[in-house]
Image (cartoon, rainbow, N blue to C red; front, top):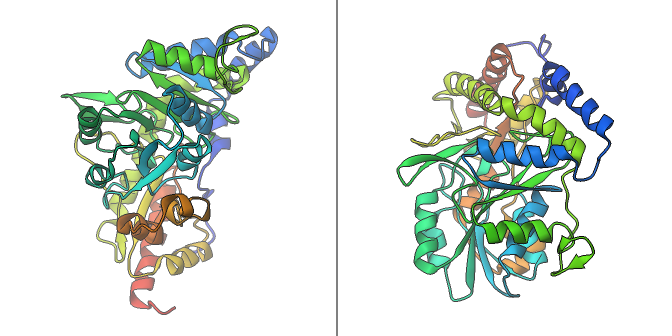
Length: 387
């Protein structure tokens, strides 16, 4: 048994160390933006949008205030009607369904694939009806939803596809015979620059992606009070801007995005090696032909032992989190909208998932230490399930 005292800083996310490693670049970027003093829609915002668009394979990037706003702007741009239905996953953060409901649309929750935690195209197909207008997959924990199947369904039923790539920026999947960045396959992609994301700022931020000029123009207008020139408002919009200072930070970090992903994958590789064939645990599944960025490293704990395992880990000084303890159709805010529906895979995931520490600054020894403690605690739970 390893002692609870150790030399490691065990944190779910370590933003401080990432900043210190990149301090010179970030500080210089901030100093330049402050000296320029154009804090709203300063040049850094447009430059960041251009550079991220190039990094994603050539797409228009439309920065906004946060990831939730990005989802709202995307749905507003599609000019849907009250009561139109948006099919989305039942296993995600609340923002995904929240924006649907706020716009007077109806969220329709699909079940998930048990291996990937992502929306199940077969469940989606069974839910498509006369009011369905949009499919909204979430690339959860850093791994691609089945975009080949979802885009085929959308084409067959003339539906829009909005991708939520907040946890998977920089991930790719095989689509139409080539590797393509998530968020660039559907009609609109949406992301967040929340500090813990693959590319995170020092506060809130988000963006929409699209290849369609008319959608880009509409989103840009909607994000600036529905205007396309000052004091002329052609539609009802909102106020959602990426701050110049956040854009400066994100520009400094963007060249490191592939390195951030490689570092996350290195941590995941240690976990996978150390936790293979561990009692009670099902490790994350990684699809062939897709790049998993491991925004979270989320495993499953069988036989109702998640709480016991988490309690033992806490005693050992190892942090863990549950993303997410309730499926969306079980949340009080959405239960009435969803109606009585059984989604067994989403419900099972909400009972079993447990996420381990994951960040770009984790040392291999630290990851191994965490994994060894997880293994020990899982073995104890398996041997003494009543404790």
